[in-house]
Image (cartoon, rainbow, N blue to C red; front, side):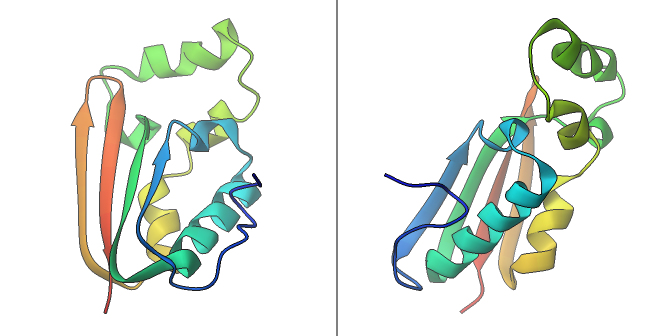
Length: 116
């Protein structure tokens, strides 16, 4: 066991790294560290998969619901998550071979292929 921002694995250990509904639970600084760790332990040509909540820039018609979520539930980092696009954070860290984003109701999925 451990924390996602400080994994106990060697560099380029995994073919795939996945995050499912984690990032909205983390402060921005830790989100950045998790992306850096994911990149570090991912093999060249490997895939980083990400699923989490939509963010403010993803949808105007559902923004009202996204803004209500942290008010209705105890989600201390959600408001910051809404306004810090994960795509931008990933582009800061990864040299990308391929990058895709798909949106599904209140969720979005990123699939990133790390450069060789």
